[in-house]
Amino acid sequence: MKILVVCQFYYPENFIITKIAEQMAADGHEVHVLTGKPNYGYGYILPAYKNISEEMLNGVNVHRVKLYPRKKSRLSIIRNYLSFWKNSKKWVRKTKLEFDYVYSMSLSPVTICCAGNLYAKKHNVKHIIHCLDLWPESTIVTHAVRKNSFIYRQLYRWSRSIYSKADKILISSPSFKDYFQNTLKLPVNNIKYVPQCSLVEDSDIAAFDYGKGTHILYCGNLGLIQQIPLIVEAMSLLKDEDIYFHVIGMGPMTDYLINSIKERGLENKIIYHGPIVAKLAAAYFKRADALYISLKAEGTVGKTIPSKLMMSLTFARPIVGVLKGDGKDVLEESGGAFLADDNPESVKNALLAISNLSEKEKARLGKLNKMYYDSHFSLRTVTDLIEKEFK
Image 1 (cartoon, rainbow, N blue to C red):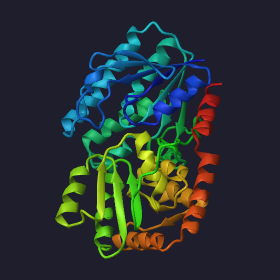
Image 2 (cartoon, helix red, strand yellow):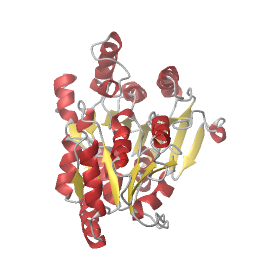
Image 3 (spheres, helix red, strand yellow):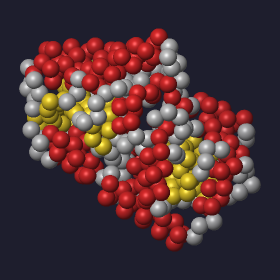
Image 4 (cartoon, one colour):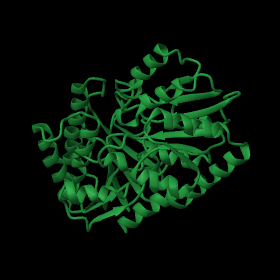
């Protein structure tokens, strides 16, 4: 099959779409990716890509359109979103390439999918949207817009229109279905649950040497819904314990984290490693005493399965989870996690419980998590489910 994959983000940006596209190419499909020039997390277009519009990466044909780089200001983010929306549709109108199917991965913003809708309509082919982030719900949870405001109403209409044009929608969390039915008021007969897999998986890379003590790792986006302040508050209660918290990633809460560590004198308790590419981050997962995941229990987004949960399951380590909804269900089913409420005292107690585990018990809990991942969320499992929808 000839498949057009549409997603604003692609390698060297760290998103799961890269692995899925490469796996589909390895399965014998001709895969083309319509994406933007890499800038996410950098604040500028990577210099090496300023003059690159076409390239072949691991068997995948990558077509890059110009866009405005995403910086910290809200205006720059809006310009970033709209520039891909405009230029990706421009590419679709001009291309002479023909495809059997279009597969769009819907992250933020949902306008990523507009080029897919346009190609499908123009060439009369099927368009599948894989929804990993709900719009306009995500704009509410991140406090980007107020619910029932004029902007929200416009985003609601736009989002509903974009989703409604797809032939099928794959959802990464079961609870998404309720949102489509009850909030977006869309039919759900063309909706199917297909989870996402892990961005980072175990490899031959040498494990990071944490040293003595109990070491907890958080790796992922430092955003508003990830409850980064909870880490600071909990570790402030553990100053006298031999427990250390390591953070990898970046996002809107990066400055808050760095400043709070200094203000509270936690430099030796919370170690911020900055952003690290996925393959190198694997070293930190391999020997951590536990992996930490938190998501604000607000709206439908707060009930989903976060992408970092997949990463945590695959590395065969115990997990500390501050989750509700689908994410909590996964951890209860895997049997290898300590669940905490979203308050510092509860998180502190969960970290203390990890510190009291024997190495044998940690290994047992980690094995349960890995077994659950392999049977539900592996790259092979997820790609097979997607390819089945094409067939």
